[in-house]
Image 1 (tube, rainbow over the protein chains, first blue to last red):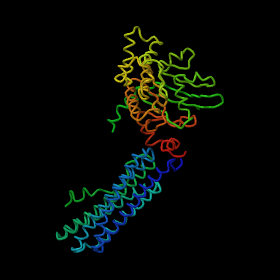
Image 2 (tube, rainbow over the protein chains, first blue to last red):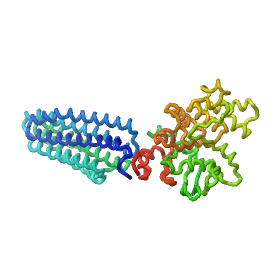
Image 3 (spheres, rainbow over the protein chains, first blue to last red):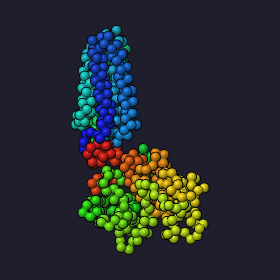
Image 4 (cartoon, chains in turn red, green):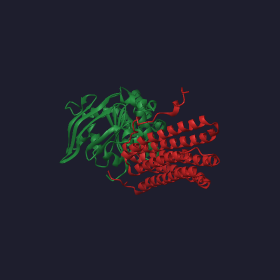
Length: 237
Length: 265
């Protein structure tokens, strides 16, 4: 099958949508890395930059939705073209959520800046954030190159993030039980860890969109999952 | 999701109306249809799509033996309607065409009154016993074709005096007046404006409760709007045949994908 439409404006419209998604992806990746860095180095200026930057990400999502609506109306896309538009919309929605989580992380940097550090937690969070950024980056690369194998790989890597989150969950629980003065900091740190874990879920969603885009069907359930924290602490003591 | 599509599924369960096996059509030396197998479901709208010259109209015309009228045209293979071979020597093509009605691209009413246009078929097939019955057939057919309200006060006026969209609906009324079981439509809306097109499409959707409708169209959007099943023809081959929603969202053949997405293929 040829890649080009007979009507070249159709190609330009599709490329515009996808270019906007890639740009949004780049902004979100930067936001996560900077939020994690602000957290570790207690850099409030950097945190402020991330908080402010979320507006631009939200605006981009709106623009992508407009472009997608325009494309549906004017071009009546079918088959892979339709899937491109549908995935553009879902991926931008996921990226917007990830942007919100990064913003939330940055907000907490301010609170944590005034608290005594929980040893090693910021470093662990930063490692976790880096893992998620790598997943996100690969998911977007897979989207750009229509690489199903890479998308599957990203999907499988979400387990690592879940395991990191579980480990942090246990660590924070221990700190809180040891000394109630740690509770405030640990609650914030826990939300940050949870947010990063959710980012990983969105990276997974994006890679699933890549699989849908290329194959036309949603991937089967049954990707590897880590144990859930929902039972940790239940029935212990 | 399942609930919404339940209607279509029950409809498809109505069974096979037309079955074609190994159909070949030649125009002299030209091999126009190459070994087509297809099962067309009863009470379903089936759309034939494909580029010009792909054989979709030729295949449609096999279904009521319209190709018999072309001397150099040769049809091989087997086509059955309700299990009966329509190319059997004992089948009278005129009777067959009463059972398999056809509507063409351009509205082509007879140069007669609106009434006579619709009454013509029932009269020559002797479907009515008296004038009252004929009146009833005319009214019912015009009602089914959604033309009654516009035409009831001018039944004696010439059919050619109607607007294009009305003329096409008159042709549909004429086609359904003989109580056919199958309705073939060869680009029925290509000469109509969007409003008349919408009216004819609404009509097609209503007709599906009584007939098996087969429509040839160049408008992919029309095929998507009106049909439950779609067949894609290319260079005389039936490339892909399946649920319309599947063909338009996730076709399995790259040639279908190229065609419906408007790519150079």
